[in-house]
Image 1 (cartoon, helix red, strand yellow):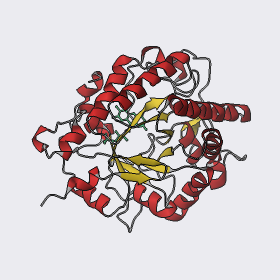
Image 2 (cartoon, rainbow, N blue to C red):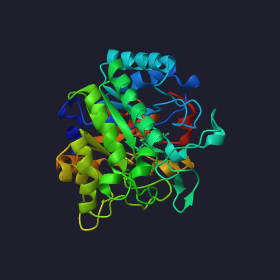
Image 3 (tube, helix red, strand yellow):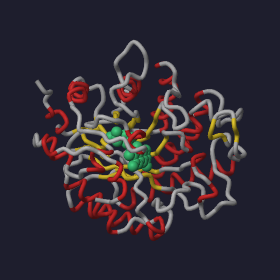
Length: 367
Ligand SMILES: Cc1cc2nc3c(=O)[nH]c(=O)nc-3n(C[C@H](O)[C@H](O)[C@H](O)COP(=O)(O)O)c2cc1C
């Protein structure tokens, strides 16, 4: 018998964030923002997901500055007046449809390709100038650059709150700037920003701590983390639960509210000898709410989908069982929602026959 999907549609009380159900739209870069400012089509795209019954929408990655944060054309920022005005329209549309939404703040760090940007003379920023372990490309960030990057994240988070969003997420996953400090293979620093766990978490903690000071106690702060790296899917920032504790606890002390634990397949265990996934361990180790993600409702994972693999609709039974067991609190859904804004409503209403396969053709439009 199929597991009961009702658990996905129970309200969630995540401390200072109260959500109508357990489904989060995962952050997905769409590159449909000419001039790096989201337009009416982007606002309508997010509004459709709110109308489709998603409990919380997380935006595509949004740059906190106009210089070092991205090399990808048409990626929105939240640093210019035009972009802020665009995001105001987005949250106004989402609210009009009864939805809730946060912005994901994304600094590409070593994954920005200077040659493809308007500022090719500006080196990319990362903890030690390393993208592929063992092959440094740039100088390590200076103290002044680190301070600037922290300020830019804090200003972007404050702007997110001021515009009326419900929360902000710091992208600390997938080998980008913040993750380049976490992972020992890309953080070779011997100063206060590297070395032990206290050093490697300091950059994220300063962003979180100073944001908390600026936005106050009530505004929810989420951090997205991943063990896997773009350079190495099998990488583990934390190799044991004890190491994971040393990674996550400082972030809690700094003021984070919710962990968003990125996996390519949500059912894969984080460590041997336990079926708990990353979000399960984050919740167990910190007592904080957590969001899981990865291949929900689809047969294949997202990096293969970029290469053209078609993913068919898949069972939600394992997900439902884990949520019944309260392993984690929320589930983020990426491609299924990119493909079909009505995905959550169809699941709720048992319209299984209407669920769609994901093909990368969906990336070409903002439907
Ligand atoms: C087109 C696309 C763009 C993405 N962009 C981002 C992003 O900006 N930030 C981020 O943290 N993850 C990004 N991801 C990863 C998704 O948030 C999610 O973790 C991944 O797609 C797995 O979920 P899924 O299997 O439900 O698609 C992206 C994924 C896709 C398919």
